[in-house]
Image (cartoon, rainbow, N blue to C red; front, side, top):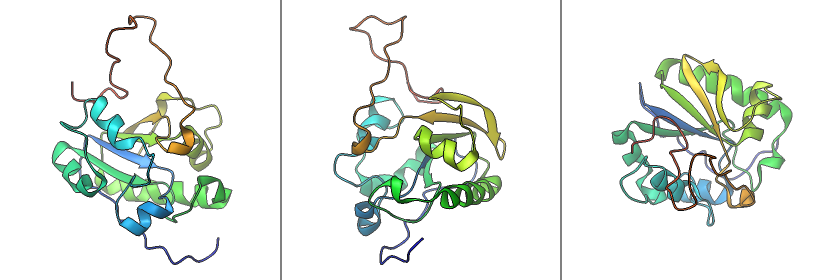
Length: 178
C-alpha cells in the first residue's frame, strides 16, 4: 500500500441506523470532492431513489441527509483508489476487520454491501452472491448488492419471474421504503 495525497472520506453513520451501505473503497474523485459516490457515472444516488430509500434523487453533497432517513454510508477499505483492483488482499481483510469494529458500536439493522467482490474478499465468503446472506456482522443482517460504480455498468438485475415487463421492480433490500 502506497501513501497518497487524497483525504480520507468520512463515514456517514450514526447509532442504530436501519441500513448502512458499505462500499468497497472511495474513488479518487469522491475523496477529492469530500462526498461519497460523487464519481461521474456512479449509479448509487439514482438507485437509492428508484429503490424507495430516498424521497428524491440525492446529490452527493446531500449524503448527511441520509441519516434522517435511517441510512448511512461507509466503506470496507478507507484508502481511495482509481479502481478497487488496486487494493491488496491484506487491505480487504484488514478493512473487513476494521468494519466489524466500527459497526459493533453502531448496531445497524442491516449492512448492505455494494459489490459482491468486496464482500467476498473482506470476509472470505467465496460463495456469496447478490442478496441476503446467512452471515451477520455485529448483529446486523447482511445483504449484498451489485456495485453501483460506473465501472460495473454491465450488471443487469435479473427480472423477477413474478413481475411483468411493465411492473415496477421490488426494492433491492427488504428495508426499502415503498
